[in-house]
Every structure is written in structure tokens, then in C-alpha cells.
Image (tube, rainbow, N blue to C red):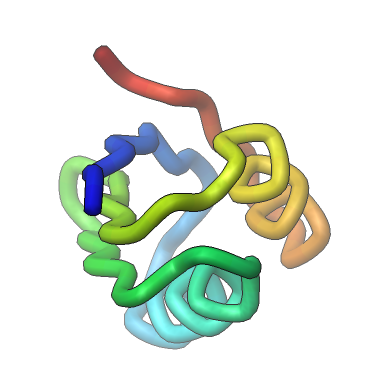
Length: 68
């Protein structure tokens, strides 16, 4: 299992955090997603395609990019 760190922008409240968490956890290969409002990021545990993770976040109306 590996971790993928994402920078997520556009979240303003806990509802946003829940929406992004649900979106990330719906991607195949994700075992768990930990999303934080400040500074705006996520750690995804599992074996998921980073591009699918970004697409899932964007579908919810937020932006994301992989962090090193």
C-alpha cells in the first residue's frame, strides 16, 4: 500500500471536506482518504491512479494536484 498526497484547493468548510473524502474513497484502489481543510490537502492510502483521484476531486467542484 502506498500513500498519495494531494493539494486540494477550493474547500471552505467541513461539508467540502466530506464531499472530497467521499469522492476520493469512491475511486478504485483507495482504502482510505484523510482530507484536511487547512492547509487544504489529502492523503490517500491504497493503490489508486493519481489522475483518477484528481478527476474525482474536480468532479466535486474543487481542484487538486499531486504533491511530492
